[in-house]
Image (cartoon, rainbow, N blue to C red; front, top):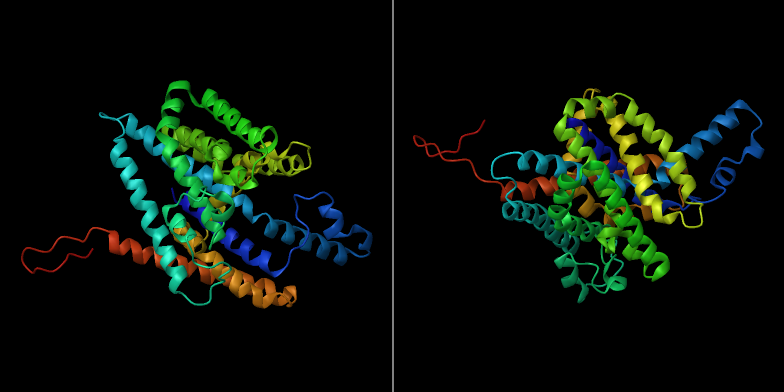
Length: 379
């Protein structure tokens, strides 16, 4: 599934750029009322050039400010990958070996997460906004919902996502059982209902820290993950049919139509209950749909796929660097800052990918020695 790696590659580059951009300037956001009026300023449109410049600036700022929607994309992608794999395994004799599955996932997640802590402690050129104290041990556990107001964004704010994803992985055996028993439609309706109720409870019935809604409580982000599982189930049954729908325009158009609706929901009185699900689904459909085009471009497609295959390492290490280096651009014009931020996103992605590749090489099984020479075989 090269298109999925390209999708994740585009998404992780978008996230890195978003974190850098947010440290440079903080313009109005597309999720705010009056965004178009504030940024596009149509009252100043006097010539075709001014109109074009204004619309291009508005589009650029809008895309830059929505990088946090890629979180929903990664949740959909995670549900997709796990479900299609588990459904295929369940159809074989013996089914899914859950002990082996859980062990494999923990070994996939924790070593790189711990290594990112070591990089944070030793590497220069990082923003260090908080002291290393008792919270460091909580962070190493990954259970950042403990004493959530002190720990959720501790040291590296991007690490909150790790806390969310391990909760969803822990729930996955139960979720896949429900999926196989109820079917995709009933499962998705049930998961969305549970997720929305959780958000209603945390937001209105028993108002709590917004960090619980963001991901401190995994059930609050279950709808995006479940949507990915439904897509993964469709892929496991008929991969050609799903890819044809997703990658040849129809999925892209569906996401493109859903996105404005999702942004408008932000303005509804209780709209925050549904926005993460809507934006996550729309974001995945748009970016995955576009990946069918990017995959075919020589050099660019493989490069994006490479970034996607190492997106986990990039995500774990990039943000302190992004904050540090973007702070030097705060007084610079967009003609200097934007190209610099794009270059910074590329460099930080290369750095994160290199770190993950290094760690993977340490943990990968070594090739067997040749009986005749005693040297390792190399393909």
